[in-house]
Structure formats: structure tokens, C-alpha cells
Image (cartoon, rainbow, N blue to C red; front, side, top):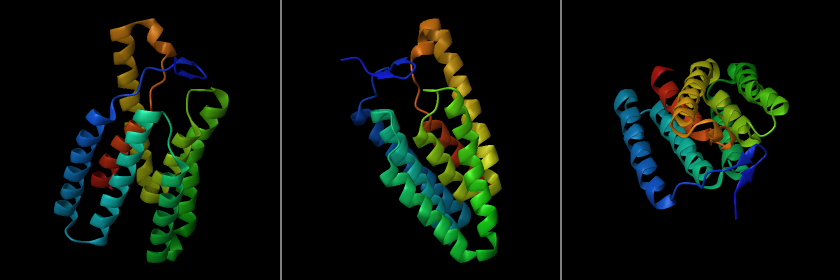
Length: 183
């Protein structure tokens, strides 16, 4: 059976046996780095939570080519709830950045069917809720890294590779990890 997306056949997902330990170790290392940089603070706990969510979503996206609502939606609610509880005056700003980040991916999704999924849109909303204005460099890093990966795949596999879908959650996860340490 051939996997297909709206734009053509999908390459087979990577084996979970290979992915999970690598992503788990990387996430643990990043969480420890956050603890080292921010100390035993709420900021470090929030960073670890965000890193765990994007790691889980990355594994699912790589394995199944989807980003589950049952992970992203509650995580978004938790992040928004905590952020607003800590600083209620920031609610409009957080909501604006969150919705703006989602809209940034939603519009291209409407225009170019199959290029971006709704899960990516919701993950961007989560990152907007988590980072506010720092979501801009997070998304810029994700877009740039995905561009480099796409160019590399095209170079190595030729024009036929244009029909293969590439999961975007790993790139958003990379942008999130960088945003944690620059924000």
C-alpha cells in the first residue's frame, strides 16, 4: 500500500525504534539545559513542558504524518491558562500572537492544498501562546530549516522528490527550542 497525501506519495515514516530514543535524549538534554540556564524556576518548568510537547508531536508527525489534537489543544489551553494566570494583563497580547501564528500557516494551507496541515496550524497557535512575540524568530527558524531540508532532498533525490511530503513539526520543534533559549 502506498501512502499518499494531497500532493502525491509519502515516503515511509521513520521507524519508532530509531526516533523515540534520539528525540527523548535530545528533549531531556534540552530540558536540563533550560534548568541550568534558568535555574529551578517556573520558567524552566515551562520550558521543559514546551520541549516535551513539541518532542511528542515531532515523534507522532514523523511516524504518522499528523499532529494529534488530543496533545496540542490541551497543551495550548494549559500554556494560555498559566500565562494569563501569571499576568492577566497579557491576555490580549498572548491571544493575538497565538492567533497570528496560526493564521500565518492557515492562509497558505488554504491556498496550497496539501502543503501544510491543520495540525501545523494548531502547533503554531500553541507556540504563539507559549512565546508571544518570540514566536516570530521561532517560526522564521522553522521555515528556514525546512527550506534547507527541502533543498537538500531535491538536490539528493531530484525533481521527483517534490511530490513527497515532509513533516513540519520537527522544524517547528527546532524553532521552539531555539526560542526558549533566546526569549
